Length: 233
Length: 233
DNA sequence: GCGCAAAATTGCGTGTACGTAAATTTGCGC
DNA sequence: GCGCAAATTTACGTACACGCAATTTTGCGC
Image (cartoon, rainbow over all chains, first blue to last red):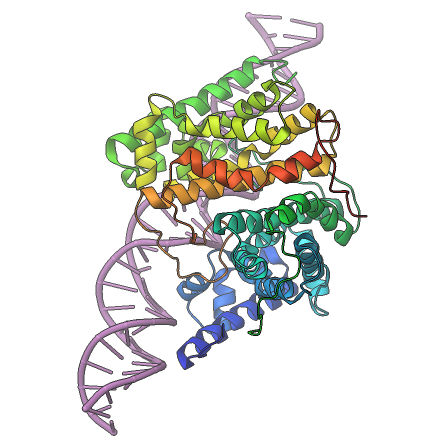
């Protein structure tokens, strides 16, 4: 249902996007992330440099996109796929942890590179926030019509918690965080005080568990849904 | 503790920052936000353009900083200042709503300008996330040592919820949100589905109320709490 | 096939963010 | 007051994000 008509035109767009992702990742792995210009990526993908910015709004996005790909929709799908018996918090936490913890086989070295480069770390952590949209949909779907605003808020908070866990984990794995000279720190730029140096799954589970009460409270007390949830994908 | 040593040197830095803020706001109000170059701001503040970026990492930051100033620390202070009797969620929600709802007297026209410019709206909404750090401190302080990670997570989530409420409110007040062509949407760039067009206080209270259970559950030694929900694990 | 309108790509120009190293200022001990 | 080390400001160069308009490509009705 989501992929109604691929649309021959749309398909080509996705192909271009994919080509850019692949090219960006390959070049970054080969020459190091700092030595890759957007011109190089665009050149390797066979498009003009201007086109690159039609698909990605920063140099780092294409690289991390090669790893994160469509993680958001996978998480959303995983949430709706959980058996109706489990609580909402359980479903969400399990789905999120699962999707974030398992790196694709070939993504291992890419992850290593990302943890090494501060700029990539930042962008990578920010991808956690992008799951808000799809997840909100999934929340509404699963609970059978929870309040829209509540769904958006909770989904965004899950993303925030995941981002925090990711940042915390990254900062423990990699080097220390360079503090910029600027004053008005952006939300995601502040150095974290927590450096627990645990495993990423544990860390993420711990972070998300703080949200569990809010998630369960938002579910309208119907653990078993009799709704015909026939349409799956 | 926080302001241990004014430090004559530090004072001058803050003066420069203030000068940049004021200049940026004044120029933006006079000529419209789109017609202000960073060179103009730097020039008006009597520093080099490069110095501007030593204090603010984007052109819009200085403008919104003139309005938001030290909102984060005010919120943190407001949280700790609440009487010990009230629940944590109540304290936090009241403090946040209070600080966000009351625009300074002279900030009125500035707020109007911000709602008009999409770029400023974006930056303004993002400032909500910057309260995470101070708020986390306040949470730990008030609850008498809640888990550090939980405090960071909850504080960040409060910021996220506030940001969402702000975005929702801004999109209802101003014009529609232009969708960018790019694919990998950043967390805060996605168009919100919720356009309730309520008053900002109501909106923010509604958004934050979703987090109330999580906040209250995290307060261990709170006055009257029936601890129904045991932590998993 | 033909042609047309929408969509995507491209080139260009502008403004911006930031690394880097030189120049200037500040704080402090003497 | 003197001078030195650290911090701050500054100039310069590079890369980048993006608006805009011209150009090419795509999809579709005929």
